[in-house]
Length: 159
Image 1 (cartoon, one colour):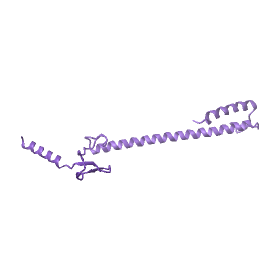
Image 2 (tube, one colour):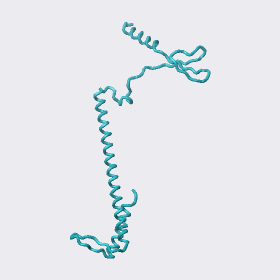
Image 3 (tube, one colour):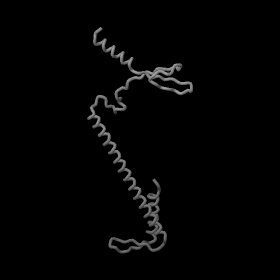
Image 4 (tube, helix red, strand yellow):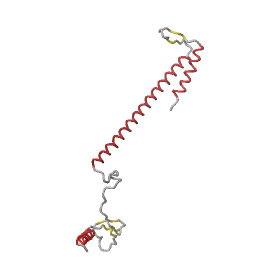
């Protein structure tokens, strides 16, 4: 046998012998114990083989086997930027939805107020382009009441 091979085998065997074992046993009260030393005299123990910890796995290291820390840092920065961009997009969508809800609420309130005013049977007028008052007659009033009811249906129902 070659001296190097023999030496490496001797070292491998000595490491296996020198590594402490862990013993597991249950005492008379039913309590399970773990120890590096064998149990007291009458206890029946099971020796548990402990394997050395493996290098960082792909799940823990983010699949970074064979990658330098600079590459891992760049990937981390990229993921962080993507998360931030997604957060900003979600925030913008939420803001747009709140803005739309506020506009719908305002249109609903305006339509309800206008319908109430039109149904009071008091004189109602509009201001034309010249700034003059133009009173609404009964035919226009009926059309406006129908239009306000349609707006209430459109803007006042919950989404």
